[in-house]
Image (cartoon, rainbow, N blue to C red; front, side, top):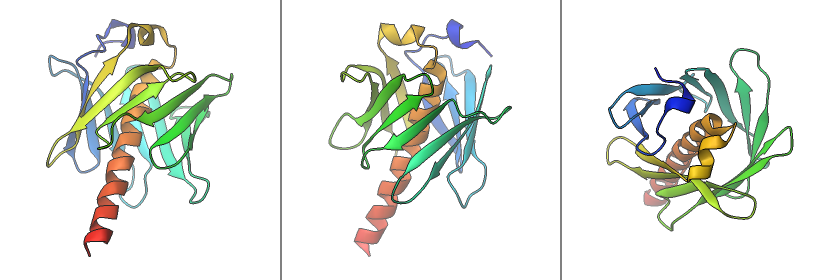
Length: 174
């Protein structure tokens, strides 16, 4: 597996490979990270990649947030706070913040943006039976110290959104 600094970010794609199991692949189809749900009854996942092991879990009902922990030490370097169903903010302990926003009406395009609204890391989802997403980035994203976390958390948020909207569709249809 390659280190994050060696990767070409454009051409990365997330692919669903099983029930609540996902892989981040390069253009050459090399697997560089995995994400799997820890238990079927809640939203906790673990991400495993070279030099990166994270746990994410959505918590709260009225005050929704996502806890982010390093899998080895349990430290929480940042927190994600929802701002409605289609946006939120990732806030790091040192004060850095990035916003997560839906980029189109259909909910198939999402992006991490700077506080002034400039997108720098995007996800375009697709798939009929299995969810997948293409990852794209602005040149400035390459130098971000938290780039790997943003790639992982963005995918996690996208999978949660897909689950939530699928559940809403079933409720409305019945």
